[in-house]
Length: 347
Image (cartoon, rainbow, N blue to C red; front, side):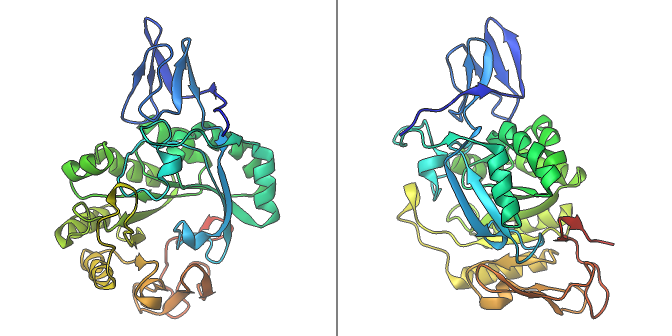
C-alpha cells in the first residue's frame, strides 16, 4: 500500500478564514484547513486546494465496446486507467475497493503518480484511445488536462466513463479535450437517485446536454438496479427524458450484478433486459443496446430507416461494419457517431 501524492487542484476558490470551496462537483464542499471533501481525494492543505487523483491505480487495454462505446471507433481499443475516488456511494459498485477510498470499510490508497507522456505513448503504440473509467473521471480534471497535452499531438482520443455529476465549470474545462463520454443515468427520479448515490440527478442530465453542446460525443448507460431503475415505469421515464434530449443518443442497458452492499438482490434477467430495450425504442430512442444478453439483436447497430445491420458485434468486440462515410450503404441515412479517427461523420 502506498500513500497518496497530493498536487495542486483546479476549480476551487477562497471563501475566507482559510476555507476553500471546491467547484468541481455539485456537492460544493467547503473545507477547513486539513479537511477533505466528500470524495476524500480533494483537500484543503493550508489554504491550497489539492487533489490526489493525478495518479494511476489500474491500467488495462480493452475493446472500446467494453466501456461501453458503440458509436465511437468500432473495433478499436482503449487503454483504460483509473485513480481512487468517487462522488457517489452506490451500493452495487463493482469497483468499490477503488471508488470508495476514504470511506468506512474501504481499503487504503492504491496507485502511483501518473506519467502522462508514457500513458499516451502506450496508447499510441496500440493505436488505442485513452480512457478514464472504473472510478470517477470527473474527479481527475488535472490528470485529464495533463494527458491532453500529450494526446492531442499524438492523435490519441481521450474518453470518459463518468457519473456526470459535475458543475458547469467542470464540464466547460474538460470538454475541449474529450472526444467522447459515456454518462450513467442511474435513476428516473431525484428521490431514487439520492437514495442510491447520495447526490441529486438534475446535474447529471444537465451535464449530458452541456457536453453535447460543447461538441463531445455522448452515450448513456443505465444499469437495471432493483428498486431504482429496473421498474418498467422508471425505464420509460429515463428513456423519454433521453429521447427528448436527442433520439440518436445511444442508450446502453446494463445487467445488474449482485455485489457490495446489494449482494442479496437478484441479477437482471434476459426477459427484463429485452423488455427494457423495447421500452427504449417505444420512447423514441433509435439506438438501444444490451451488452451481454439477447444475442446480436441487443448489440448490433441498425439503420434507423431501413434496418440494415451497419455494425455487427460479438459480446465485447466489433465483427463487421459497413457504414460508408457515416451513412447506411443501402439508403444513405446518416448515423451520428465518431466512426473514423474520432471524426463525427454525421451529415
